[in-house]
Amino acid sequence: MTPNDTRIDNLPALMAFSRVVAAGSLSAAARDMDLPLSVVSKRLAQLEKSVGVRLIQRTTRRQTLTEEGALFHARVVRILDEIEQAEALLSQRRQQVSGLLRVTAPGQLGRQKIAPLIADFQRLHPQLTVQLELTDAVVDLVEGGLDLAIRFGSLADSSLIARVLAPNFRVLCASPAYLEAHGTPAHPHDLTAHRCILIGDQRRAEWRVEGEDSIAVRVDASIVPNDGEAAHLFALADAGIAVKSIWDVGDDILAGRLRRVLPRHAMSAAPLHAIYPHSQHLAPRVRVFVDYLRERLAQAWRWETL
Image (cartoon, rainbow, N blue to C red; front, side, top):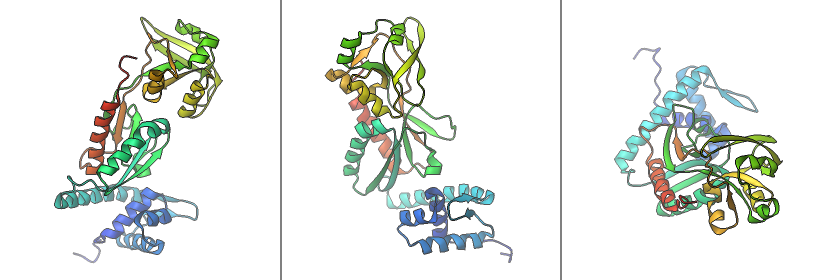
């Protein structure tokens, strides 16, 4: 080795660097690693000294990867993944689900269906810790340090892996009291005369239904919540007609709390997917959890005839 060669033989420093990037700050990384902030800061400084370049630009308010840091980080993630797999092989972790599993899911689906399944799964694997983030926003898995996203539909990013968990379809629905007071639509165009519940921030939307023909109907909103679960609650409270996934409202339809509107007209919907950053060297906790979700969601599916 010549005097100008750079040698990196400090694994804790690589791990600290990876966690600082994933957590977004030195202090957050220190909390995740259960280490003093001074230790994490020292390890990062040692690593930058070893490679001879600054990897992270830090201010009092934010941190960003330098160009060299971004290139280096991509390789470090691969190295740490390979090390984890080697450790898993030696310790037979393929039969022992452990560690920290970070999952994100839509709010309403997460509360109603995913959270109870996570509780059951964790009881089966008590050495596993599960961190659940509920949001209807599309989250960057790599940037957010997440292992898995549960989403309706796959993502456009071709570097992600999408695996179907369960079927899905969307329905127009309203409460019996609303339909008794305002009438039941007999044709898609009748929707224009009804109180409609739209999700997001737009007061008008196009609802497309499929029957003998594909029909697009422009509807005006009476209520515009920015949350899918709130739209569900408004429908239950006789406020109007909503479009919801059968996973969200199927139980209410079976119980009679809601009724399908235009049941002979289908609405397109993507299946429920598990989405993760890569398929090679998938951590056992992710692989086993996805298999568990597929099995349990298949058991829960009971709306084929609605």
